[in-house]
Length: 133
Image 1 (cartoon, rainbow, N blue to C red):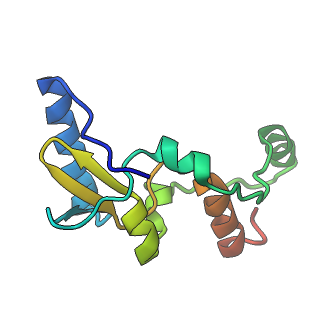
Image 2 (image 1 turned 30 degrees about the horizontal axis):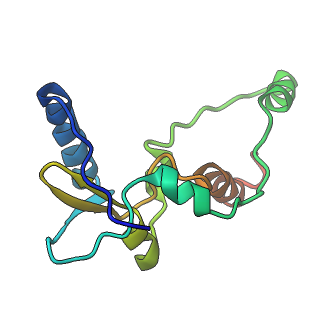
């Protein structure tokens, strides 16, 4: 895959992008990449076309609601930025780089939009909470 240029953005969108990137950096999800490092890809749409689908089953909402209707006690947990809890391999970090108008960044944790992110996240939740899910 070839290097893609930064997407053009109007000033207001640039400001929002800068705020979002700073938030992801503060959370340890994203880091800035030096100018001399090669960028493999920054468009997850292109990456997703080459990704072999992970067929891990994701629960159907209707079945989940049916099970909940029989419950005596229901607990809700909020996994803040759930996908961002998955640390990426060094190879995945290089593949998941993004280019913006003021630099190159690479994800340190799984971003949204990756084809297999939902199935990987579900697998992780089933491993952590085997009895609850």
